Amino acid sequence: MSETREIRLKRLRLRAWHRGIKEMDLILGGWADRNLGDADDATLDAFEGVMAESDHDLYQWVSGQAEAPSELAEMIERIGADMRPTLGRGA
Image (cartoon, rainbow, N blue to C red):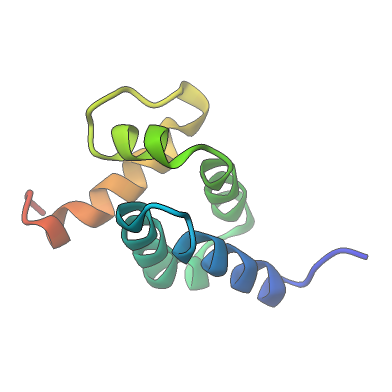
């Protein structure tokens, strides 16, 4: 039995807000709250791929301290661009 879109969104939001590192909770959970409702299936798939990575790696990639793998780079850039105005690093 496949999950409904509603269940998938709830699952992704829950995982985004309960990462283990508070910084990633805020970054991924905030992004999820602002963007998942309007996301298409491809975006949900990409976000799910990001969610499978470790917090340490994700923080380095999102903050620009390290380069993200090519298959995740577009989604990591979207997440990073979304958080920069909140952190006061440009619009």
